[in-house]
View 1 (cartoon, rainbow, N blue to C red):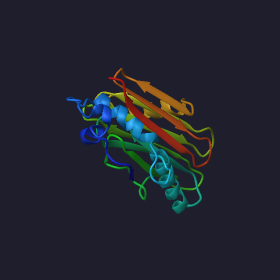
View 2: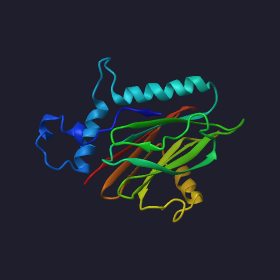
View 3: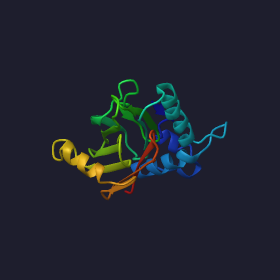
Length: 207
């Protein structure tokens, strides 16, 4: 489910400091998207609060059982498009991935256990307009501590260059937070410690 609206050149030019800006760069788009993240609406809700409410509503509808409440915020200055995913344990059939996440939008979905005595462990890969692939992974096991893992690499890195098995190994050895920086993009993650935690991911831009 997409929460929020695209931050594009028209939106950016509605900001006084950018009205006369002749070249709205991806970096500017990224900066304005981050500003939109904390801006509040008429009810006093920020975009992050609205996304949190939406994914919690999915969890309430799903009911009891291990699940991961995934929230991906795109402030890359580009549109992210779904490429691949891997379920080591669990599924998203009722609460599927979004196919595209525009700059300034949240994508939220619920990854739930697929059987008794199982957890929620998986990942999803999105590709930006410039060809970078972004990996978002979560580990909410039946037994053990939760962890999250992110990375940014070139086109078709997963699973062509790095196998899903290698990703799983990095994920399970990661902690509750993870960061990746390739000089252009910064990707970060944080997962809670509950049985059904929120896993929060953010993509921002440096150049």
